Structure formats: C-alpha cells, structure tokens
Image 1 (tube, rainbow, N blue to C red):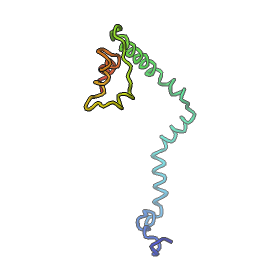
Image 2 (image 1 turned 120 degrees about the horizontal axis):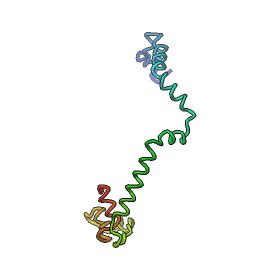
Image 3 (image 1 turned 135 degrees about the vertical axis):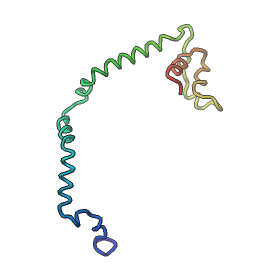
Length: 125
C-alpha cells in the first residue's frame, strides 16, 4: 500500500500492465544489444595494467622519448650565464600584487629566468 490510499497510482505508467510480455521482450532486446560488449568485457577481465602498457608500447615509448627530448631542448636552450631564479609561490600568494599576472611575478627574478622561458615556451597561462 502507499500513502495515497488508493492502491497503486503508478500502475498505469508501467508498460507491462497492458502487455504482459513487454518485460521479457525488453530484457531479451537489451541483452541482445549488449551481447558483444559483454563478451568483450568477459574476455578482458584478466587483463592487467602491464598488459595494457605493453599493448600501448608502439605509441607510448616514442611519445615518452619525444617528451624527454623536448624537455631537454627547453632546459638547455636558455642562457647558462644567468642563474635561474627560484619561484616562491608562497610569497607570490601573500604579496600585494594588484593586477600583476603570474608570468610578470615570475619574471621579477631577472631577465631570462628559467621559469619565464618555460612559461613562454608552453604558451603562458
């Protein structure tokens, strides 16, 4: 029974109330549509992370090498005569910076600082 006291007021919204074979047909249609995906998931249930990484090795290893080479080029392309100024994020957060942007704060450490080079090479903020 429900709070309305008149039986089941949602009975008319159930498609199985007018057609008794609706739910078995619906179940078989859904399971038929999902059969291939369920079979694929059943086959990949024993796949480990190592298997996935090993399968991705053709794309993963060259991209990792490319990223390492690009990072090396960026690190060695700045002027070695000018020391890299350390970024004090805590100081940048508590200082009164008014309308200054983060790249402006980072460039206050000196011209050609490593952080400024990395930010400009990456496109800034």
